[in-house]
Length: 356
Image (cartoon, rainbow, N blue to C red; front, side):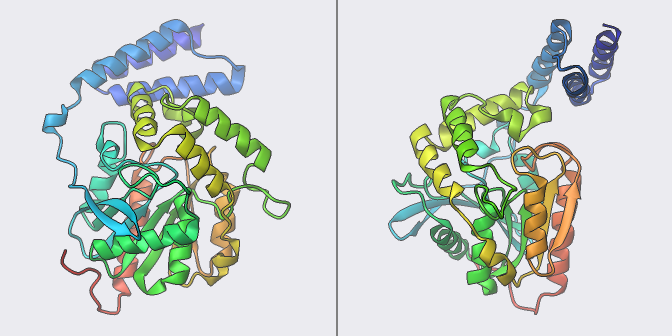
């Protein structure tokens, strides 16, 4: 088809002038249009051209030896459970990241993941990362925690990192944990920056913005069945689903982040989470961000969170990637940094951290 030939020429052109990422973005746009308008995939020849560009792009990427070293992993204890955490940067405000359902502090820094996003935040702030109990480098627990236990763990990490007052950047399933932390310990939370989150794990008659329990179980079964491969990547990153680097990163994250059985139990617990009653009790400044095309968490769920938290600022961003470090990241970084500067401008003069 003529459109396919034109698409291949554009991909070749971008690659020839040293813009492999632009070439791959052109391929993904072509793929998306064909799916939406004709219900077909790009021709084999077009896919082959994109694969060749990916191979050349990966070959020219800096080797791990030339990349900045990942921060040192440290451990603290919450009761009998060891929690792994990292600290990087030395800015005037602490930022605690509460991740989604899976993480691994070491694997997160590998190509394809959020390393560049983390380092950009750490240029201006003191960034605190951790693996929640049950995943990554933290202890694999038998019983998945509810949001009350998880918010206590977050507080323990803040203590271990010497943070008295932090902006909490919480993504996806991390949002309910951050909301509980802000309600129960507002003196420790300078503000909430919530990304693509929801107040309840599954749908009810008065909460239609999540999967029903039956659909959630089917999704979970499909995820576990593909464990160790780039499972459900079309949901989490539709436009980047064909990127070999992102595929490898996600498959490895699943293998290193948890086991299929542990994750089944953890995600079933998350499905039962419900912090709707806590939303009106949030009294810290809150920014709620959501991409309009997010397939993993519907944008209406984010709108509900923003509407229920008093004074919350709502920010819709273009894009389809549920993962915050993919797609157009500049608007997200600008929003977080602007929000943080606003918090700093209204600080009462007290310090935000103590020496480690």
